[in-house]
Image 1 (tube, rainbow, N blue to C red):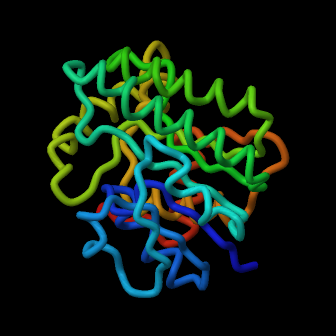
Image 2: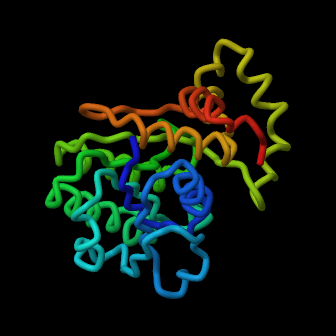
Length: 224
């Protein structure tokens, strides 16, 4: 079934890969972007110039949508950006949840983070708060929890793969290693497409194992 999808943060790292994939599969995409990012969008999308921190700037575009994908967040997260996580990631999610609830959109898709996590405490805390907001709003939601997404310009973690391979074999570290494993952008897009095309009743959480499984089923097994 074709979906009418609003992608908030359509030209970010994940959005720039997800939007073309959705268009190719015949879905209608409303791409929420800042004015200076319009040129980055592919053909075949409805452009919605908006401010992710002000829901009223994109609420009119939600009237015909059945799916909302929240991808807004600070680029290249690091412990030094803890305050930005609150002012950008959290506030944009708060605005999105309010708008989706008001518009009665049937499905909210949120890219969160693997948790618990041994690193990036402030980042994880904000994503947990966003998940709480989604739950309290009573939305039907797919919460996707990758740890680190590999792709163009994001390949240095490949150096750590041997250590993760060892950790996955040791009983004391296996569960943590499987939870914070690396996800390719192809797997991530495949999992998001699967989530969008198969909305849940209630809340479904997608851990790394599901991201890999469903992402690869959609042809996302490559390391690109």
